[in-house]
Amino acid sequence: AEGVPLPPKMPDPGPVLTVAGNAPVRLRMLAYRAARIAQRAGGHLYVSFPYPTRGTPDCEQWRTKAYLAVRNHTVVGYLVSRTTRAWGEADLTRPELSIDTQGHVDSKPRVDLVFVCADFRRQRIASSLVRAMAEDRGASPQKLLWQAPFGVQGLGLVKKFNQHKVLVS
Image 1: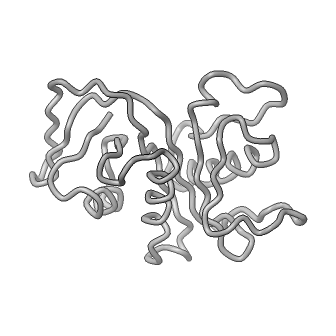
Image 2: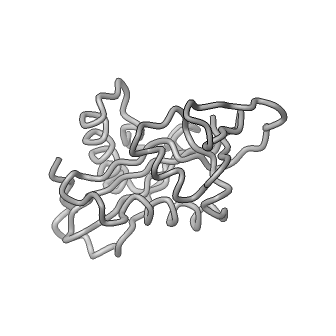
């Protein structure tokens, strides 16, 4: 995947652009296009960021945020986050994913999906997206909730921030 070019007259947003579910339509369209690339690359059935309709976004869109990594006026990385409840704690020290489901009901920001275009991988872009999300949501990266199950690369990213246990949903 090559990434998503920013609109021609858009000023440089910096390394990470945050797009809330109630952002202007052109920003939500940018996030949606990045989500489509992530969907195709990952073979997912659904697009992880809602299509930007005009007018007032519905409740789900308000809880959804996208974080876009920008390099050379092109979106090359994408993280989508929702606030939801944890349903367990995964033990990362075991070879198989072991989840303890006792007593986790707090609503927390969740990392739903992280995608980086192939030409830009191994440049700490995914880590920078997680850090930007944590800072924006007022949490430390170690306290974030993660969407399970994890792929091999996803597990590596989770372990950068949590060595032993992580909250999942």
